[in-house]
Length: 157
Image (tube, rainbow, N blue to C red; front, side, top):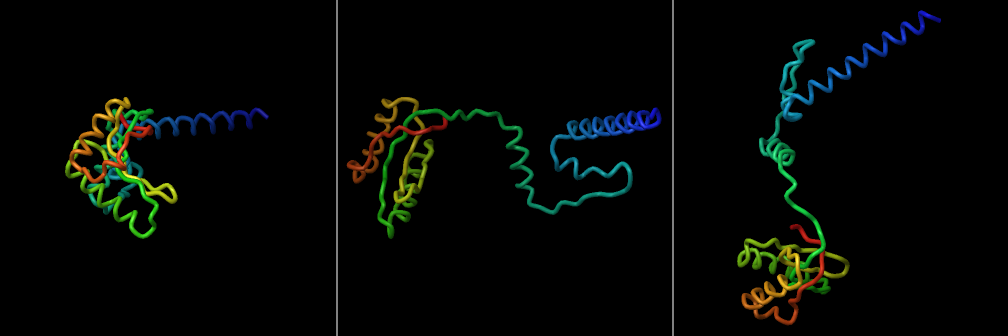
């Protein structure tokens, strides 16, 4: 019985130390790509990853990015809404392109909630901010006057 307990203690302590060593090794590295590039210390194995450098950049940038975007209740300006099956999608993306050209500083959102295609622009905290911007949109696109209004939405601030 003593041998069994002794074997269990040795087995447990060995694998506990191994797991701690593994965690320390990975946490010291900046990202998974650096871990894969390192030569195996037990042998001479290496991993070669053939991929576009932009993939690594996306993952590293996403990790290092601070969470500056806050999602909360707010308002957007809805410019277009249609349920015409044949033309609504094409019109929505055409309007999105035009809005991005005229208002590059504002985010444009195209959404489809069956059966409606909608185009909304901006992320505003208050209804007043959205209504002021609505006037700017109408000045830039007078043809959308009857369809353009401020709507309550979940926004990125």
